[in-house]
Length: 298
Image 1 (cartoon, rainbow, N blue to C red):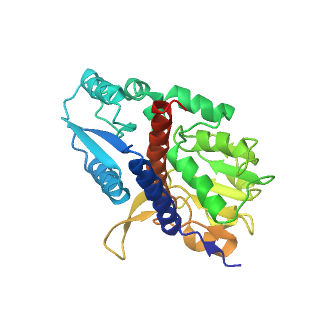
Image 2 (tube, helix red, strand yellow):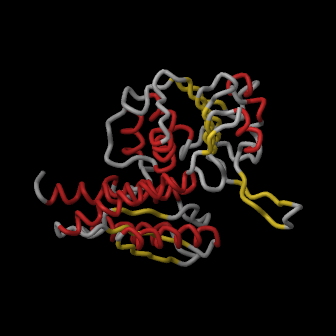
């Protein structure tokens, strides 16, 4: 068996085109969409991520506001920047690039964001709404990206056994909550396995949909995959390639083995990664629609 490769770049491009249309429609009604990004310090990876977000905003017609704070910034200084954006009616979405320097209380910073502007969907209110299935305006970007990859690839989770490797607050937990909801594009039976699970392969071999989000390069091998399963690789790991003589990106799944066993599989790079920023942009325009409707009294 040789599986289909799910092209995350192509799906993300389709979503971005839809987002750009929604941004233009709002602009034609007099509502500009704006995203504020707070970057604390000079971490090279964070700078790259912020640059990519700012660039994508420009491509989609979203106004980006970048606030850079020094490496020595305090929690109070970050909170002050957030509060300014919370109060600004022209700002629809706010995010603080993670991770901030160690002296900044990240949990406090996240919780201070207006939940209606929380485009990363990290605040307690938004996480709670995901858990209870309250059909929130904003959804966690990477889990939502996974669901959109499945939906747009013709994979319906309903009645299927989805196994998630990893229990992080960013991917594993919210994705499990979203997949188990009684809703279109969900209705799966969900199992989460993690570092304390005995015989992880026992569970992964039962998965109709296997989602790897553990952050360990090459953790999932071909013998851990059920023939005909759909494999979604969320992992992004940098490993040294002796043939190339430099680091390269790889996922949590041994792609060459998975593609021979699975019905469909996402590559790394080019799978889930592009979807995360696409859904961040979608969240931003959804927040903009919400604020436009509230302004119009709808």
